[in-house]
Length: 108
Image 1 (cartoon, rainbow, N blue to C red):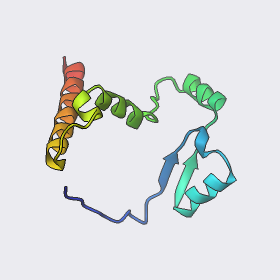
Image 2 (tube, one colour):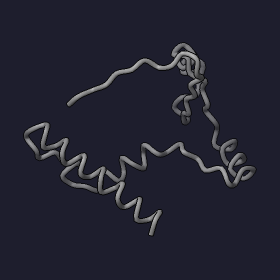
Image 3 (cartoon, one colour):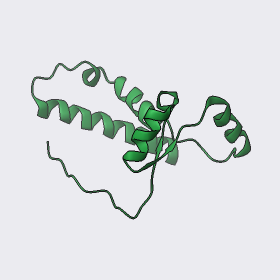
Image 4 (cartoon, rainbow, N blue to C red):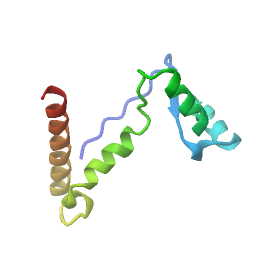
């Protein structure tokens, strides 16, 4: 598996959206130490903002949604493959199928 590592641009601000697990002074201190601007809304605050800005969609749960879609593929969820290349191929196939299904939804 090949990896490409690049440095973050220093002139951009980086935002980090968190949930209730990131509440507290220690978590905020760690986020600010890593040069992130923390956004940790409470449940009531999040509902209020959604009612005020109904057209603005939340992108907070993209990772959880994608992991849920990947868990529907049993060969990816329960790893039976012995080689890393076979498993990675199945993972890429599952991701391609998910992307294809999303294209069908968008473009009919």
